[in-house]
Length: 229
Image 1 (cartoon, rainbow, N blue to C red):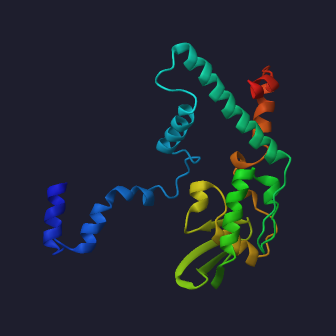
Image 2 (image 1 turned 90 degrees about the horizontal axis):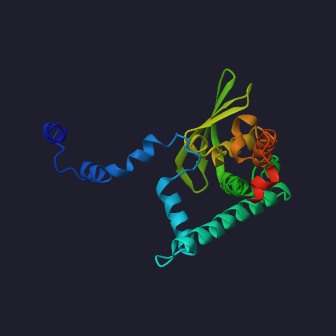
């Protein structure tokens, strides 16, 4: 493959071309383009391991005995569970609001606090976007958007008005499952006052944990013991 590639470069007179050489040097980053529309529930192997290792270092060191390791590991696990309970409590009993000119769209009622903050960031970015062109194709609308003071940046958003289904060229929703700033901008133009169910992933909603606890409890497991273990 490598020999074939070198021969191809020579035959097309691209040997020594700066752009080709730079692109080849950045080949390790090409994977981002291919996985841009693949959903992995935000699981990143390296970052998750680093986060766990960093937390465990505050409890355990290389001088700990087996007994100390087990005791400190249980303390670390309780800390994780306590943080999860606090985050779940805050999500259930607090209602944050969007601080932009866009309507709230009930985002504060739907998403957990962490996910809501990400939607809030996208909402702020949507305020700097403008629709420059709108094309009608049956029940489907195609919007072209540009950014304030950056007209060279263009993005296309598709909208199926009959089913309230949106799609965007940036693929943020496919990757992270939250509406991107481009979709939120189009929703504002179309006077959509709520987030359609097609843009809501149950995993990121407030009721997900409660539903899971209820399902486990119905199988004979003490839900209180499970949450506080």
